[in-house]
Length: 132
Image (cartoon, rainbow, N blue to C red; front, side, top):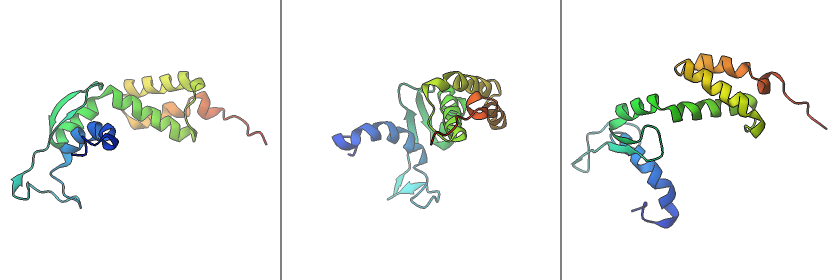
């Protein structure tokens, strides 16, 4: 119903197909096989526009898709770079961002290698002076 309401539709069209993977968990995180006497359906789908688009059944299959996703790995590297820099990434950070993403990809998603790659970028090593 909320996917039909115009004010809710935009977000829920993207969130719901992924969120169905978590249907076996109740409101406090406990596992359940039924809700109101009906069997739980935890099948969902990664929406169009992502490199791992397609159906899945449950959280394990969703996690496997996420783990294989180059889009997710790239996003993770970018968010980590934002955090390490303590600011939003700017257009002038494009080379550093590409270098970090490449290093993370070559390290097959090894977070320690991501951290190392970030600490070797100019944006991390050469922070601008604050102007009073």
